[in-house]
Image (tube, rainbow, N blue to C red):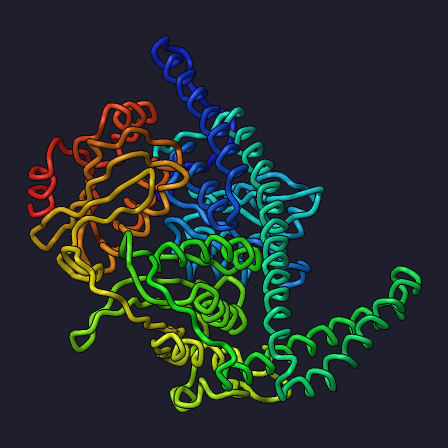
Length: 572
């Protein structure tokens, strides 16, 4: 598959009438794919959802099984960061940019046009050819905004070995132009929402601080906050009268930023002390914690993803009642998410996981916040929730703060009648778990019961798991397989692959499949084949079958008339 011909124009044999009709149908399909992509990107507020829509749509549109994308971090001084890979081993993709970022960026800054690996000549291009071949990539294309390169797209060869037409290449450049605007707008939108959230929290903190004005800490408030307010206001005034861009203005801007940072530390200190004196009395009520966490996730998603960290949320229960205080739950989650962001590098993954847990006959609502960062040394776990403790307490540490966020979160969790725990392995990420008391659930099985088969994945696509013989898992899809739901399928399939099983997809109730859905199927086939696995499709609906035949993908996808036939083929 890696030796197939790359996407280079021209191409397309129109000597036969039926072939001409097929090519016209493919072009119409491609144009619809671009329109669907533009609509999906316009509606997405998540940077990673935008990237998924772009990669999967292009893969389905051109019949590719490999694609990956790197983005330049803010400032553009560091090498591009791998943010998503589909069908390409992540280690190979990271090695490409670690070794070839400089020559690739030089080429794209000189000429912002797709680069075909097989056309590269000369000794200076040898590393690019070598590492691209290992990853199975044949084309690199720049993603640029106003002549500034913000990312690099890598594409593999077409499965059918056919070259791309001139129209295909124009569609690729058009798709990247649309995506570049969406990526930049998504980043700005995420930062704007994050600033709005911080402003709202600042307002809430000020209201809470007002309640404490007759407490002992009011003296500290007067002694520290008042001078800081004067300092900040004075620095802001001086900054306005300085010449724009002058060294003096830069020094004042830096001093003002540090003063604001100190002001925030003082407020956190006051909040911690107030929590310790029972000033934060919980007002708990029974409510659906799934709804609250989902709302919080949607609020934090744009801001976290704009910093090139992927935030996902897994809900194992459609509804889960628990007793909690909405504001204090958000404060706890804020502390856990901020901790994960602070101590993980760009390109990391952060996952929220909501489920029901049973311990010693008691039922709890459990919320996990997991990251794949550097982890925490085991010797420091016992003191992790103590005030003013940090994993790296030296003056040269990279992450700032006073080390009171987790201590405050623990006090709030205990005030709600719950608890907060942490597990970590150095070099293997961390997991913080919040347990909150629940009321009795009069439902069938708990959400984390291994016998639970039905999984409602989204409003547009549901995936249910059928009984299987052990070697393969059967997933039955119902609904739409498009830019919004394709990543859901990829995530569920990854769990099947991690269990060492093959995959059977029943597509009989898929009402619509877009280019991104086709791209997801090609990714699944490639990923399972990399580990000697098998993916077979069962009873595709007329909508799915028409697209598969239009793109001649029945030569690469294994299609069976029934689940029994597919399982028999796997066992053969």
